[in-house]
Length: 98
Image (cartoon, rainbow, N blue to C red; front, side):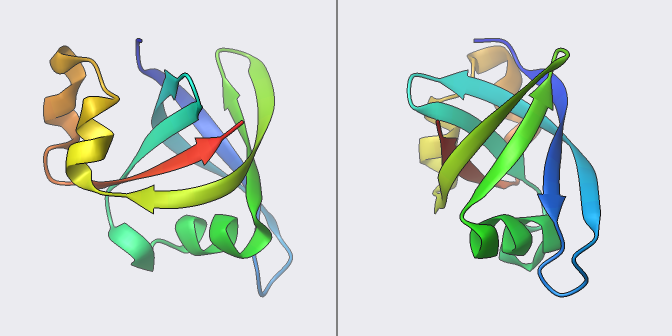
């Protein structure tokens, strides 16, 4: 379960502009877990929640995910390998199911 740098590909909910936001993401049996460093005030979080889905490009492959939801820090840490959990020690987490 290694982290991979990737890009969230999402559309601005008010501008309609396309964005590619850099993230670290961890694959899970249900989808992905991505650290949310600025919580629900992050524009990309709000855009993804408003659209109900997102595309994520990791390791050269783009996949679509739907039904995003915010989860607690502790639940997010449980999805991360121990060596990477410290990176998200101060962040909330969000998951995207595939």
